[in-house]
Image (tube, rainbow, N blue to C red; front, top):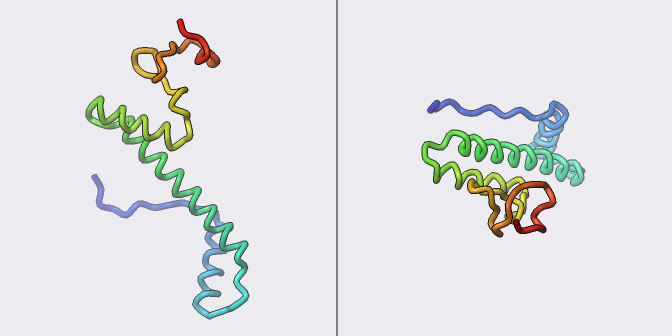
Length: 110
């Protein structure tokens, strides 16, 4: 694996805004717009969340053992917000024992 530092892409508007905010903080300005700070935080937090999802997904696809792949898959599904009742297992059943045949079949047991 590379020891190179990873690069992150963010929107240009966010980058320029962060530079302006940093400049304001360094110069000690008191009129910092809290709403802008919250907006930057939200954008950066969403970016971090997307990066974590991608890392977990990559581990799911490249893990050397079946157990590690399944663990990473479950973490990924949890991270993207898929309810455990809607997760399908290798034997064709989900955790409640319902067979996967249709998107609404979680109500029916075959």
